[in-house]
Image (cartoon, rainbow, N blue to C red; front, side, top):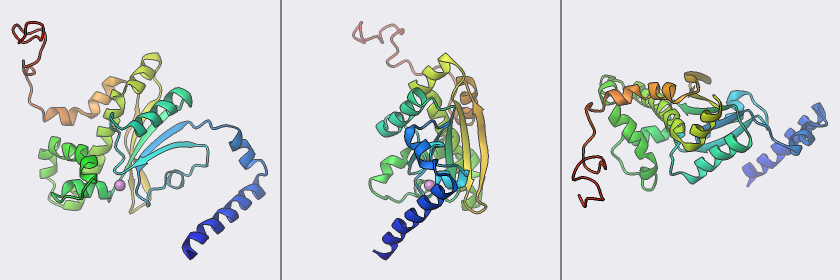
Length: 235
Ligand code: CO
């Protein structure tokens, strides 16, 4: 209970100091929010969005989950994205991964951690798609850091595929997508990809993954334009 009370005390002191520096600080922010950025990051306690970016209340619209994933079936993330882009009109969407990510480490092991196994499946796909490159990295820590980087690029690609981003880009080249990795050892944000403003540039990020996919025509099964394979002909 003592530690919890400390949080309340800290809050009182912080609010008082902000008000002392600017009597209108809270009044201005209470009126409306006009953030320029949507920040999507890991839930990890060591990567607080406003602290590591040196931003203030009102600057970032924030969504965090384990291993900073952007999944099209995630109603929470998609709602945040839609509101940020279509209502708040953010100019930038930033995906921030971080070295030492527990979610990535868990995905690297064959161990089951329960429910979170389902959530981490997309990272296991990133590992599979980039197996040749990752297998060539002997050091486990370096390998996990590379997976963190590849995972960020993958999530940028996922973002580019969402109807929200597709519709926004059809109207203009905003928002810009950015991928960052936070180095927990140095406290620094490293730029993985910046200024992504089109499907072409997002596709280029996934080139590494696509390079590992067998080339050639897709399988015929289920293709409606193939004789004998359409639903109409009962194929
Ligand atoms: Co993490």
